[in-house]
Each structure stands twice: as C-alpha cells, then as structure tokens.
Length: 467
Ligand SMILES: NC(=O)C1=CN([C@@H]2O[C@H](COP(=O)(O)OP(=O)(O)OC[C@H]3O[C@@H](n4cnc5c(N)ncnc54)[C@H](O)[C@@H]3O)[C@@H](O)[C@H]2O)C=CC1
Ligand SMILES: O=C(O)C(=O)COP(=O)(O)O
Image (cartoon, rainbow, N blue to C red; front, side):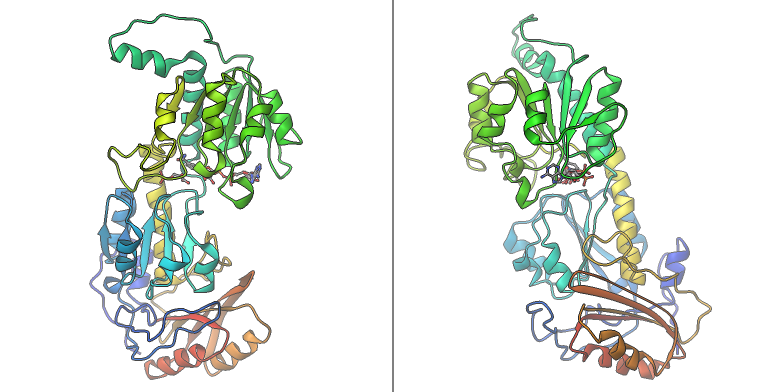
C-alpha cells in the first residue's frame, strides 16, 4: 500500500505519524444522501470517494475568539482553520457547520440537536471552556460526534475572581469607585466589613469550589460547603448536609454547580429568604442557577447587602452595548441596584486560563482527528491505542462507533478477521460504544471493502478508517 508524502508542518511525533495515516470517512469529498436520523439511523453513503487522509482536507471552524495557542496547534497540522471572534446566530451557524469536520466553541454557542443535524461532516466538537451544557452531548454521541472540553484550566481564574468579589462586596468598592468616577467623594464605613472571621458557603465543591475554599481560609474565613456528593474537605472546611443549612450559616454564598435540570433556579425566592439578612450572593456558574427577579426583589428589600453576577440566562454573542431589557427583561433592574457587581462572563477570561485551554483542547482535537483517541471525551467512552508509527506497513486503523447492542463485536470481528488484527480496544458509555483496532497486511485495494462491510452493519453509527 502506498503511503504518500504529505506537505504538512512536522512539529512533533504526532504530525510525523499523521503523514503516514489517512482518513476515509471524514473526507470533505464525502457526500451523504440523508441526514443522521434518530439514534442508530445510518448515514448512508452515496458517492463517497474513499481517499487517504490528508490533514489539509480537514476544515475547522473556531468561534468565540478561541485563544491563539489553540489556533496555532490546529493550523500547524495543516488543517483549514476559519476563526471568528464572536458566536453565530443559529441560522448562520447551521450554514457554516454543514461544511466542517471540527468546530471549536466556548460557552455561548449552542450546539443543539437541530444544529448538529445539519452538521453532516462534523466528527468532533471542542469546547474551549469547562462547561459543556451548551452542547447536546447525547445527540452528539448518538451521531458519532465526540466532544472534548478543558475540565480545570480556568478553575483558578474563576476562584480568584470570586475572592476579589467577596472583598469588593464587603467593602462596597465598586459603588465607591463608580461614585468617584462621577466626581463624588463618599467616604463611608457603614455596612463595610472585613472578611476575616466571616463564613463562606460554597455550593458545588468541585474544581472551582476547592480552589476557593483554600483561598478563603487563607484570608481567615470559615468555609462550609454543600454538594450532592460526599467530598473530602480542603483545610478545615466543613460539608453541610442540606442547601438550607448552608444558606442559614453563610455570610457569603457562592455558586459553583454545573447547569443541569436540577440546578435550574437552585436559588429562588425561598432560598434567598433562608439566607442571613445582610449576606451576599455570588454567581459565576451559569445564569440559569439563580432566579434573577427574585434576587432583584431580595436586594430591594435589603435582605441581601450585595451580590455579584458573572453569568446570565441570555448572554450576547459578542461584545457591545447589549446589556439591556431587550436581551433580558430585568437587565435595567439589575443596573439600578447598589452594591451589585455585574461582570460579562469573565470568570475564566485570563491570559493564563485561555492559553492553557487553547493547548489542552486543540491537542485533544488533533489526537481525535488524526488518531481517533477519545481520552478526555465527555460524551464517549475513553479509548486509545498507542500511536500509529511509520514502521508499520500496510497498516490501517479502524474506528467503529456503534450502538451498544449485543452481538456487535462478533460481527465486527468477522469483518476484521480477514486481516491481521494487531491490537484492539473497545469500550462503551451508555448507548454508544467505541472500537479501535489496528490492522496490518491490508492491501490498499481491500480498504474500501473493509470500510463498506463495517458501514453495512446495522449497529453502525460512524466508521473511520485511517491509513
Ligand atoms: N464564570 C465562568 O467564566 C466559568 C463558569 N464555570 C461554571 O462553573 C461550573 C462549575 O465548575 P467546576 O467547579 O469546574 O465543576 P466541577 O464539575 O468540578 O464541580 C461541580 C460540583 O457541583 C456539584 N453539584 C452538581 N449538582 C449539584 C447540586 N444540585 N447541588 C450541589 N452541588 C452540585 C458536583 O457534585 C461537583 O462537585 C461549571 O459547570 C461551569 O458552568 C466554569 C468555568 C468558568
Ligand atoms: O469554562 C466555562 O464553563 C465558562 O463558563 C467560561 O466560558 P467562556 O470560555 O468564557 O465562554
């Protein structure tokens, strides 16, 4: 079998490997005569042209100002990378996503089933952030689209933002600063406090909650936390059994839970009523977690002495004068409140975090596109085989994403059994299973049949053959 010399930048072992491996199924020349239907529905191939993998055929769309580090890694592979600073409205997104094999987004872009249904060539999604709530993960998995994120590269940045807000709220710093910007000298100590000796209540004691716990104790705060799972405390922090216990005991309540059906309006009128009078609320998790009209009410009543919001139910696609009632009906109410810190979803927006996320997610995308490795995927089983190497002639890597139903492996091995299977790994996650096999002694003329035979199995979600 011929291996073709590829004119791609060879920056590391991975790209050397790539120059010896080719992709059948994600070829942009592939055409499909029907969209991916419901789970298990086959995407039938009509005039698919099988051709060796060439990194320069891979089309990548990066939205939301993905960091330069990530762009550089993807461009160095020879991929065609289109970069946009903002997110896209759904109609434009659908138009663009039809063509690409890889999409990189941050927290704004909503990759719903409706959008993904149009993404005929898409094989992988990179969330260049922590949260993956903006993607229909199940639909993606059921249609053979892997999703990667960066699980903790911006946790510290969020924790540091929250620490700054705890002190800023306790001292009403933002109000004093705004007044002085307008020329008003207003030296007050009334209602201004040290944070030493106060209690911080952390809801969701994961990566961010943990960091925050350590930093808060270093400032002399006591820390209590509430989480749905039992977790080891950092320092002398103490887990409480109910959200109510936390709300009643904390001077500052800070939210660090993911967006889930169970966390929607986790803090509403009832919960705000349970908080101490004169306490503070901070939300840098997701906008859906706090009932904002209830918060406005609690602040107007003087129940809360202050709050900080970094996230909102509706956030604009890009920068501009968008924080108005046109976007969220209560935006003007928020803007009118004292000691309410409003930030435009900047918790993870530091140079350190963005550059680390760029590297982490782009590396994961490259490993997936070039080698099929799913390590770190959030919606697929994690499967990996050691890298393809130049010294394995007539070698192909088969990736078979399939429905997790009885009897599949027997059928797959009947297909692969005509060849020499060097190594194989398979794992499942819920309804979807992922099989990787390296096969040698495969003549180039046999590849199409190998691929077609796998495509014809009823369990098939997606077949890729790298050679
Ligand atoms: N403002 C920003 O820029 C950023 C916001 N985030 C948001 O912060 C969230 C948390 O991030 P991490 O700490 O990295 O996540 P994580 O997954 O490490 O921790 C989340 C914790 O919340 C707990 N949890 C889940 N449901 C809960 C419930 N109903 N009640 C109490 N606890 C619950 C989990 O058990 C887990 O311990 C992310 O999902 C994301 O939405 C993340 C990064 C940046
Ligand atoms: O990492 C997350 O989940 C965040 O919320 C940060 O999102 P962003 O990258 O600022 O769109």
